[in-house]
Image (cartoon, rainbow, N blue to C red; front, side):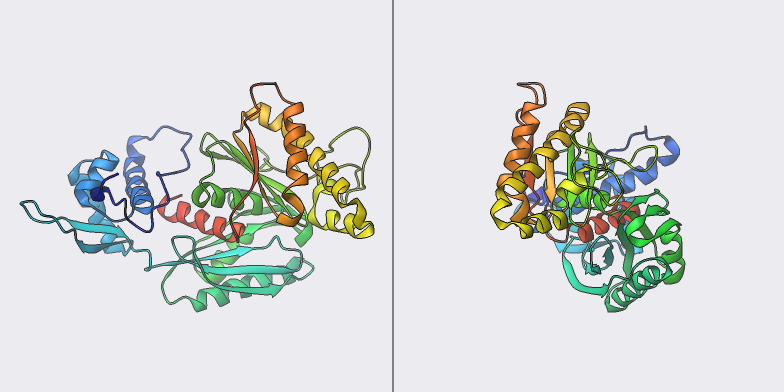
Length: 383
């Protein structure tokens, strides 16, 4: 891209990566679609002129002028000064999203011992972080979440665009936590309660579904991918054809309690034998290695093999391009990934899925940053 299109912008993340809509844009929704298109383009390409924006989006200059005026009035977009030019005519004024004008609060409730929270820039940079001990669950867990969010909102020196929360368990699109055994929540309206308590937009999603959004937006993931989050439990987030998959039961990616194999296996917390989580969770792996440090390679190889068994039918059914793992690198890198890759190749059609990559994410704070993407998408249409 040339300088007129903003190639030198430090905020450039690569080509625009909006989560693809699954429905046709109706005339009555056209303005909302155009708003999101303009903000998406600015977010990824950085500062550009109104004329640049018209060329990039295909929208008329009149439409761009109207939308940009609205964004400036709302404090979403700012004029950044003029571009230096040597040719005739009036130099164009550059515009960009006001990246310092708002903050996002992200919360990660998936940790084994603490709830983590962060104040995050619109570019996904963690500016401040706080944590609180994780209560056993129920009302005490909610009060800890509310208090943490309230503290982070109070730390912000700019208006808070919204609060994103990644929670373990099955979460409905309206932020109702249908079932989270780790937090002792059933049909718990976390999104509604937090929004009312803090008087801010709140979005609550499953933690792995939040993580996959961070990998897609900030990690240059491919448009057909599975992210598996491995910690105290095992969960996954899916993106297919640039669109997140949630499922009719809001449980897409709940692979932790899929039994892998017919030969039994370790007893899972759910009561079954041989669940993927029983083989693969970080706490289980560390416990097994601690019992016999000499068995570490065997333990990791066996866990990788079970992971390959679990993902092979998913890769084949959805024609995925890559598998991304989020979890402790000392456990996952090397032996475990090698075993998973080998098993995946053995269990899928030769010559078709041989190039499917299994890799570790390079991102830290992936749930927190994914929570920020949730807010960006929900409030600005940006991803």
